Each structure stands twice: as structure tokens, then as C-alpha cells.
Image 1 (cartoon, rainbow, N blue to C red):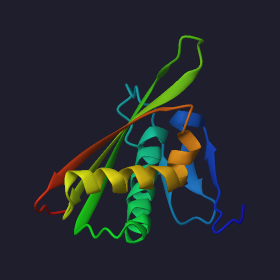
Image 2 (tube, rainbow, N blue to C red):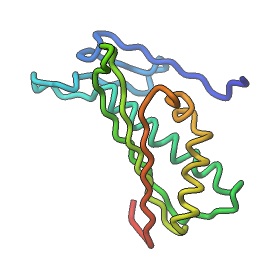
Image 3 (cartoon, one colour):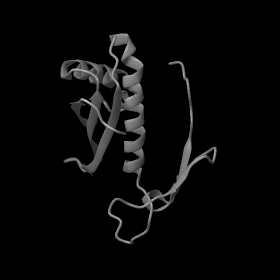
Image 4 (cartoon, one colour):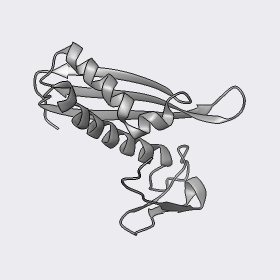
Length: 143
């Protein structure tokens, strides 16, 4: 595979610690998803949701011209759940909701399915994470 981009991040202290991109451009204090201490911060699932949402929306923009589709606008929301599997391991559960303007429902579904085929996050999770795709087609919306 030809690598187009590479980055790295370091976390210390796990879910109650700190994480930062190694170039220093961004960092977060972390809190567990069951934050009972009142500590302000974010958790890894929120960061994953943000990255997946941005990547999926970009994948739609990338594939739309190849399908001769021209959505006016789009937004992608990724809901991330974390839970314990029957075997004791932990796993993620994802709901991806895409809102598209300027396409029919059929064309929007075609676009979303193709984006799901090429999105790196979708390819990384395929087969080992429950992912549900949802589509909303509207006449106009504000981001």
C-alpha cells in the first residue's frame, strides 16, 4: 500500500490521562466515559467519532464525481458505543447518520454505500465492528 499520510499520537495515563499528537498540534485531557469525578475532558470514543465523521464525509466528496453525483451539502454524524462482548472482550458499536442535500434518496444511498467502500475508517472496522448506516435526504439545511 502506498502511504499518503502518516501521523502518530501518544497517550499517558489511559482514559484518565492525556493524549496528544506527536507534532504538538493538538492534545486532550482524557476522562473515562463513566466520568464520576467531574473532571473536564474528552474520551477516546469521542475522538474516534470525530475522525470517522470527517473521514466518511471526505470519502463521499471523493466518490461523488466518479458516480456523476453532485450533492449540494452533506454532513456525517458518527455515534460510537462501547460495550463488552459475550467473550469478555470490549468492542465498539457504530451508527453513521449522513444528511445529504441535492440528491434523491436512491442516489444518496448509492453515494453512501460507495463512500463506505472506500473510507479508511470503514475499511478498518469492516467485519469486526457493528456499523449501521442511516441516510437523511433534505431539500436544504444549514451546517
